[in-house]
Length: 78
Image 1: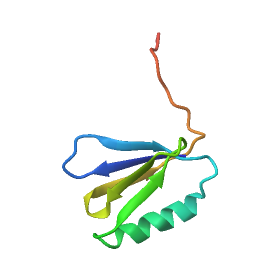
Image 2: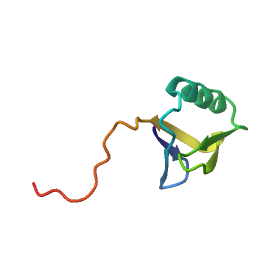
Image 3: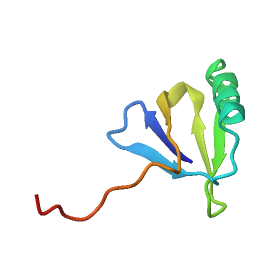
Image 4: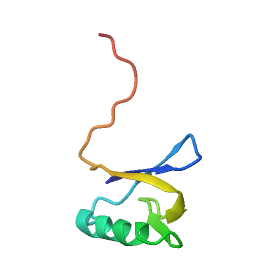
């Protein structure tokens, strides 16, 4: 599952690929809980086991995608 997080005062987004078995509804509930309190930190673990913490006060948006979405890369000849 792909997660993209916008951070205030930062030109770049945080892109994470979470494990495919992550429960989407549970993840959303955790995000909602963290965003309800500016003093909390959203901790996520990517597929490789790296942990990323983002202070909730700095999160501008969270986009939850799916691992089924094809990632496009390379060049097009059209």
